[in-house]
Image (tube, rainbow, N blue to C red; front, side, top):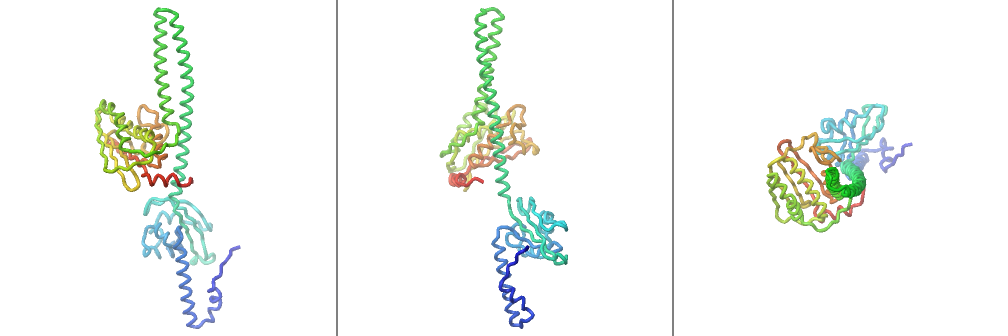
Length: 389
């Protein structure tokens, strides 16, 4: 059973036929104040409220709704919703037999966002001309992004944990094979210097060398993918860039690749795990080098604004097609003939653990730019203190 709240005006409205001109004027002023109060109340809501007439024209829109529609207040009232916001108008199309509905819709104007819409039919059950639809619009863009980030983070963690487990299991049989090869070599020593014995010893030595190489790969892989919370300390990103470039100096020289580093003045310290950040930058640089067969240039730019320290790495390599760019952070996905396809996944995980972001822009046959953003110290503190969703 619906519940109705009565105002002091209800008693007056019940005797409206008995009122004289003076009292009618007083009543009109009271009604105006009541209307202003209700509009003020509705304007304090964060949700947008829209009242649509039977022909879908806008009879009322509160301040939040006007902002979500991206038009001026003067352009709202009386306008057809489909002319003001076609995406929302389409989402608010209600079948005749339905009294209320809730759905989510993505809109592109005045900016890309996700809205949750609740629509209800009010009044005019017997008279179609008096029918109204009331829509409540909630901006859930941040909520959707946080949910997607949390799901993506959990997906990354599960993939990395699986990869680490597989690498660990590979290491165990490698150790067993190495032990048995040692035994085989000892037995071969007992056979003297015969050609057959020498052949066995050489084969065993080759196998042991390959096992040592594979064992090193597994150790490096485990060190890269094992989840470890960053050990946050004051870090100078300029120094980290210099150390990473020193590691890759010889390889750049062999490939004939020139590297230009541009550092803006007064780059502030960030809270970071130096080793993890170096690993992230190393992954970006390795991808840039592998995108250029022989020759080319890499431009590294470092700057800061009020919120971030921004590190960009631009190469003149083969670039990444648009249909593949969306998959670069997928586990085991790679556009190269060789490679495990985990480098960018690890990069993304490291940046997220630091409260940062990764952006990639690429044009085939022109090059790729990877931008890493690290929050400034004051912003990082806020990130760490924020409650978990």
